[in-house]
Image 1 (cartoon, rainbow, N blue to C red):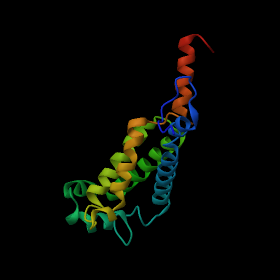
Image 2: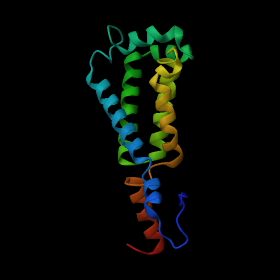
Image 3: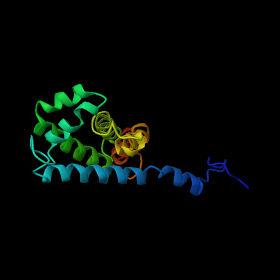
Image 4: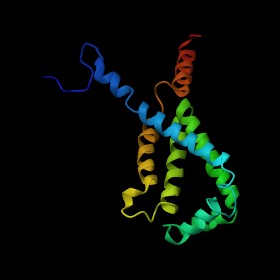
Length: 171
């Protein structure tokens, strides 16, 4: 019984190689769709983008300030909670669209990882046990996409193929 996942010497890639090639696509779709949804949800929730009040970004940050790993980061955001809320929402939207479309895939994934890291160190740091906070899981989920980018079914792949053909003299 053969169990290796490498192409056979005859060049037959096989189903395992094809599966490996598309392995990150479900993760990419999940993270991209989730971040697009999260960004749109924040932008369309007038209560969230307020400086104060129930469910506002300002009240949420004040509530987690003392339990955050980096309270100074929360303090920085509290100087302009509405602006910070818009920045997070637009960042999530840009990261989600970049990930779904596969445009600047590694950069989009890095943005998603940084957003998740900042939310973990502020909003969900006090989750006990730690694995109840979902931001750490999102951070770990972004890392394979930071490393691999978006090599299949993506604008990055299309642009790479176009550049390679131009260099080879094709049009």
